[in-house]
Amino acid sequence: MQPHLKRAFTILALIIIAFIFVRSLVVPESFGQYGWYRGDSVKEIRNLTVNYRGSASCGEENCHENIYTVWAKDRHKTVNCETCHGPAQKHVLDAREPLMPANDSRDYCGKCHFKRISRPEAFPQIDPGAHGEDLRCVYCHNPHKPWFD
Amino acid sequence: MDITRRDFTKIGCKIIISAASGTAIVQSMFTKGIAAENPPENGGYDWEKHFWGYVVDTRKCIGCGRCANACKMENKVPFDEEVYRTWIERYRVKKTINETFEEEVVIDSPDGGIEGFVDDIPAEEVKKAFYVPKICNHCDNAPCVQVCPVGATYETKDGVVLVDYEYCIGCRYCIQGCPYGARYFNTEKGTADKCTWCYHRITKGLLPACVQACPTGARKFGDLKDNKSEVKKIMDEERITLLKPDLGTKPKVFYIGLDREVK
Image 1 (cartoon, chains in turn orange, yellow):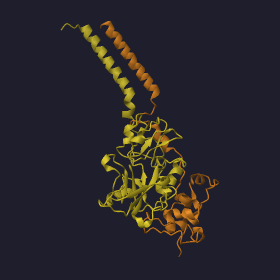
Image 2 (image 1 turned 120 degrees about the horizontal axis):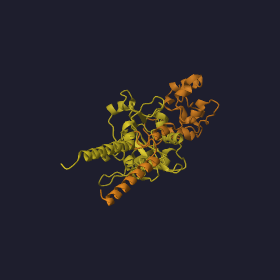
Image 3 (image 1 turned 180 degrees about the horizontal axis):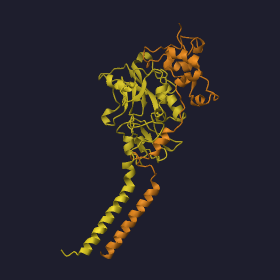
Image 4 (image 1 turned 90 degrees about the horizontal axis):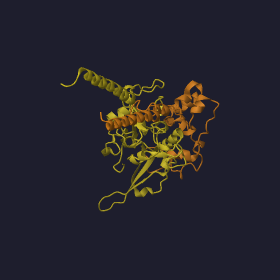
């Protein structure tokens, strides 16, 4: 082989070796494990902390069984406990962790029940000016069992 | 032939050795992509067995904003910035009719709908009005995944499009690429960010925070591989629409009751 070709091939070989070496340092271990991404990031995202625990855990283990049964039978059963009471994961894991007080203001009830033209007509709505004289809704309506028998 | 037996053996050995070592080098670079097909271990969750889908029934949405609020609480999305992983849009079609019967539509989403909506157009002027919850469509053919220059965003085997917060360089190309405006820049992390369908929840058997918070059942989430799931049932029975189907992004958020104004 001619000397100038030999030199060129040696340099090419060195460049390839350097590329492989640098690549092994820079590209993370799990890259390409499942596809064109870092496999470990799937685990990282799965392990993020949960804040909302779901209503089912409120009625468990005789903690809030009474209020849970009342709520679960009534029309507000579609409203999750944590929608008014706030995220409760910490409280479920450790009962001494206090929850945020439930928002029982008139405006909070109004987020769903004040009359709005964009809402489906069949949904129960009140005219805030004509109904309830600016009293807090919970003064008359029990939020866990909101309908009068 | 002017080649000697000695030369033939020499060349033959060289070819065999270089072929063997070359394959070894190439394999060491790419085997990881070919060989490892095992899903990541996590509490018995197998991502091969699920393929998630999302249904939005716009006829049921009351615009209370509990979904957008729960999403921000669950995923620590800054409340003081106008960025949302999910939000509610309000569409109001006005009664004004001109010669060409073009409708005047007012579309807004104050603070993503978190604080609810106030009627600022008199009811007499509005012909029809409705809310449309929006969320990342977790496209099966996602433009945001395509444009990422570093492989920091991807679709998992169970059909969720995620962002690798460690690997993202924050170039914002994916934010530009998303035709649905579902991505935003997270100033705390310095990376792009988006809805994960609460991947940390669904892999533990919980519902996404927005679905759990919805009081009217306008948002539904379920497994398309499970024939008994509610979402699969709706897919089979209802008439559903997609957002911007002409783009070929294959969204996995299915809408019921969309108006022609909604894009």
